[in-house]
Length: 78
Image (cartoon, rainbow, N blue to C red; front, side, top):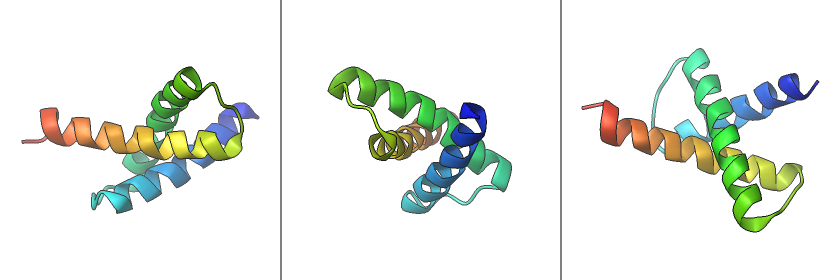
């Protein structure tokens, strides 16, 4: 069940992050960005703020996805 929840939250976070940063990607890439962003952002927020809950996890997922997009644009896509 947590894996399915991670995919759903990751898909939503990836969708919002790609739209906020004006990146047009396919569905698989958007979901992957969201899932990895959720992992990165969730770990960062939990470590720094020591907060739990769905709302903070979702915010962390969006921030992590945006960080991943920025890193991709800065260092890989040229």
